[in-house]
Length: 476
Image (cartoon, rainbow, N blue to C red; front, side):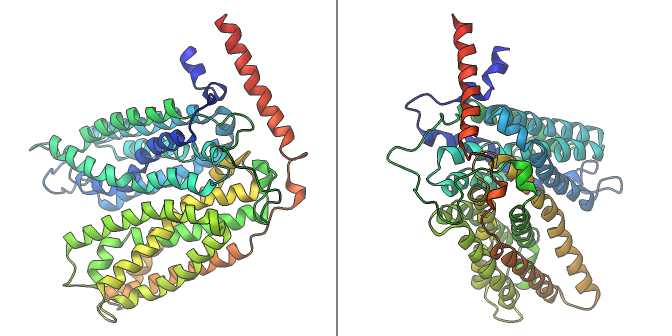
């Protein structure tokens, strides 16, 4: 019971003198682990050779079947974030982070059983369903805590954590490759044992986040900082309850903003390697294409920190204005960089890198945008529900790219030309997001919680003080 009580929100309140800069590493410990999902593609070929070992046999699974594991994980990320977001606000970050670590590790363990028994449904259930729940809980667990520690720089705060999710593949991919190589034998591709080891390593690393995270004390403010007497027009000083926020026009406009930005970004990510090889056939080979994918991962990660930090100075709405206006123009121009037109690899790579930085930046900036609109009280719960947009985009993006490309090829287009229509559709999607962002206005007063923040603070303070009183009496 003592161990379980350690997870209570009241027990995680920081003591005087605690540095807020110790909280981002705790968040990073979670996000760097769950960001491994972006490296799932390294398992695709080994999972199609479990029986043949050196090559696929007719009884082995197909890549099209394996691809749904990733999609299911992303769908469950959004759904679990939406389902458990409000619970997280009351339970606190420690309990949510532990639940994330357990689910994420358990997903690997169940996937191991799917490998050794050759039952694909166990991999769907383990890595996709259970592991996906771990993704959702881990993704949103530090958001509210960080925003309350950094009221002066909410964009910087969320960017520091969420950039870890973008960089998770940079750790997960080489780790998985080295482990599969170590466990590989004449009768085993090594993927099953790799699942076991990675599940254990990630669980242990995520526990650092569980023990390290702290909640800001009541009425805490950074030294020397005072809230502006008159907040900016697009930043509220009031709070909106999650169920109320769910019914506002602002929530659904921001849902469209996130969905369109993610769908377009996945259009580059999902086809990055074959796209550059087909647009520059004979010039770019598999090795160079692999380097291109690695570069995109760097910009995906760096963009999360850069753009969310910039948004603290120019505003969230302006930041998304840049994402959509510049993004639409770049998606329209991207196919023109190929061998049939400008034939500029440098222009193609530079353009793609900028687009991926804005893709990552969209993820990191949206929590601060939600805080501006709805206040900090239920920001994790609201963010969780908004992440259903990611669930939709995680399926819609790859489906749009793959099916539209196949349609173009079936109707006589060459491989390079097939991308032109696909990328122009992505540009059109960003224009939809542009319109939604331009329609965002401050939340009307009728949606605010009564008496502003005072009732909420009093209620939270009573819970904390009651918890401390119980702890003091128990130690006597």
